Amino acid sequence: MDRIAQFTALVTQQPGNALFRFSLAQALDAADRREEAAEHYRLCCASRADWMMPRILLGKLLLRSGDVSAAKPVLEEALQLAIAQNHEDPETELRALLATL
Image 1 (cartoon, rainbow, N blue to C red):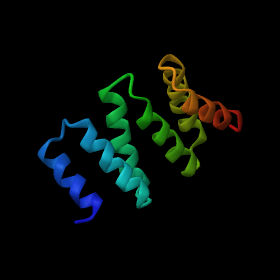
Image 2: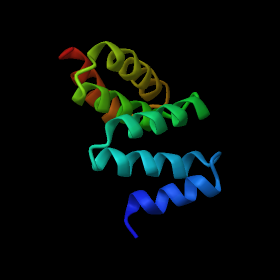
Image 3: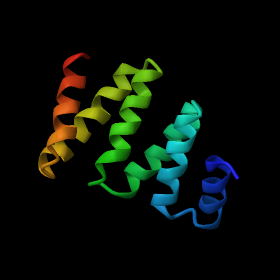
Image 4: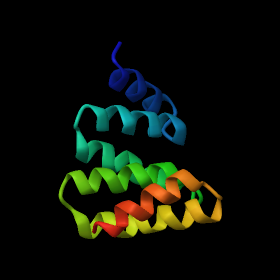
């Protein structure tokens, strides 16, 4: 079973499980199914105000889609979480990425 089918089945069984949804978003993103992936990343972001990774991945996805105006606030929020949580590598990456926008 491919990853998309695997995680779709898990999300169907447990729609409130944000980790399953995050894994599905990543699988969809890897398959370049951006709109579907973005929907799941957004749900992950909404599920936890302190969850940095779905914000980073959503921001990058939006940039790849050419939607800089939507990506920037998501990446800025991820940067604030990286700073607050002392995640130095993501902070450095996000600062560099935001500097190009």
